[in-house]
Image (cartoon, rainbow, N blue to C red; front, top):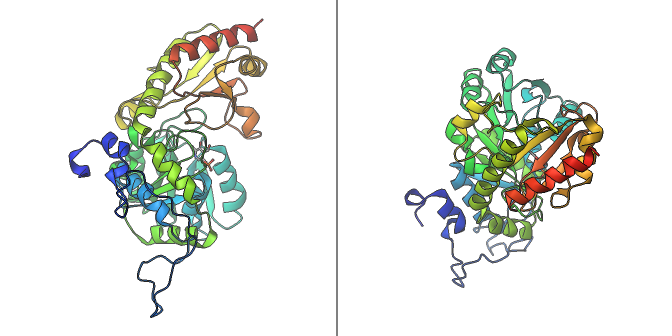
Length: 383
Ligand SMILES: Cc1ncc(COP(=O)(O)O)c(C=O)c1O
């Protein structure tokens, strides 16, 4: 398949059209070896030595992700956190980095509790405000700007191209956590970003049965080589079966993300004016502060994640979650089944999530069924 002549959904459906040369199998073989034979003259001409550093089980997933994100190289990791933290671990003590105040909470905790102890100067800012970004950049000192868009759990939107312009002018790289947008809706590297990160645990795999992460780079530069060294030496390497499942999951990525985005918009519009709902947070709503930027940098939808703020505060939110039937009360996102979660209970102290906020991950069920289930849960919560 020549990727220049077909749409990304065709590339994803056939996982690049690769066929196993030896057997002509259309589904890839599962490689499980941890070590590789050395040549008699003491060389490793295959380029493979040991599976902590690299693994043929990664080749198809990494090539597919590099193609979908329009990057030069991709690297799989054992989790989204392993991928994200490798980006920071490849920097040096004393380097200054900017990250958003609203972002995936576990990474924010790691940055504040571990990265700072290791000597990174981490500054949390309002990444949605280009003026705040420009003011915080320290030319020659700021090495990395971390963006998450749309960002957990308020679904705030950051203008990737504008942030890249400011960061590059100050000599800083830009990395984007694009877990929620996926390459279906946004391709940050085409907007100038240097790195894209995904918790592949979510939409890329899509079936709530793999923990994985990935980074895709625009170019094979010094920072990328340091990231690859972190993977090989720290050992946040993915298992072979997980990589195999990930390729299988990505074949339906475009169908799943488009369905979830259309359904999330319908759910957001339905509850936006609902008497039991204080507010709906979703970048696709005309009232959302990030709507204009989202419309520019997200193509074909606004993603499958939204949050509802229940009238009646924390107790009403928790009671609503207690009364759902079809929605599953669970953390995580991007799977085929729809999930509901009282986010402040998960994030604890310091969360930007208001106590009345329910985070919703929309799956592949009928959107009318999901709306009806939430309707009855909101009613019961107020009895
Ligand atoms: C936006 C985002 N980034 C990163 C992560 C971390 O991924 P993982 O759980 O695979 O480590 C998550 C997990 O929820 C996430 O939602």
